Amino acid sequence: PVIAVLNGPNLNLLGERDPHAYGTVTLPEIEKLCHTAADRLGYDLDFRQTNHEGVLVDAIHELRHRAAGVVVNAAALSHTSVGLRDALAVVDGPVVEVHLSNIHRREAFRHHSYVAEVADGIVTGCGARGYAMAVEHVAHLADERIG
Ligand code: DQA
Image (cartoon, rainbow, N blue to C red; front, side):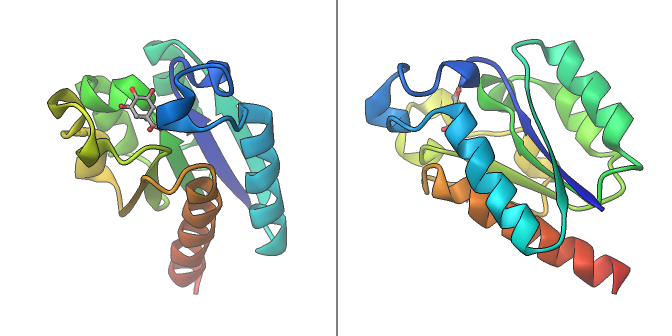
């Protein structure tokens, strides 16, 4: 079984982008953390990043019956995209939202997430480790459903 980890716009720039908010960890390093977490739980990992809303929606459609669970950091699209929210609503497996920063401690426009409305859980403000936590939780929820 596979856990998908989907990343939205600008997350390819982690490491150089706003280290005060996001730390210095890079996306390849986050992928490694996710890989280790998935591996330990007996899951394969499908890790993706795109700067394009439609590409993310297409990826969710492709994965919706195939992924045991989905972890998503939709980045700025979390705060803007009803289309992304509607795509995530048709995913068969559990969905866990993740943000590196604590979106509730930042600007008001980051406080609302459309993704949160269709997520089984949210990890926000735990940095790169939050991704491993999200993978672990989505695997736990998927295991329960397969049960
Ligand atoms: C983010 C938070 C978003 O508000 C922001 O647009 C991002 C990254 C995070 O991981 O903390 O790009 O999703």
